[in-house]
Image (cartoon, rainbow, N blue to C red; front, side):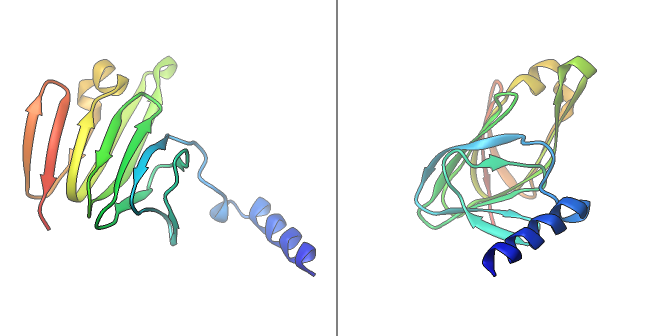
Length: 147
């Protein structure tokens, strides 16, 4: 019976594009300490080292958690404890000249180190932050967003 149920579920996912997995991986979780989670749509799963990241993912860290993300253009983003970040938009296709990085930093502490998108198309990077204190040095930013 379990085999039939799995087969039915996989068939449904294959023919229903609205329930398919995201198309392109944009990065992965590189480091993890403590607790963190990734929310994709309505599904929230514990973060694990090596787990893929997709556009629209919401990454949250717990009270003692921290996580390091590396995107395919080598952009690096670290989240401190009690932080929340949404990967709103991402495009990295140098052959077609498509570059875009839009990240919404909801709350917490972040370190952002720019990758190739910022080097090849500076205007293509947007860090969306509400009220924040920002420490800037070159292409490395320290950002703290109050709740």
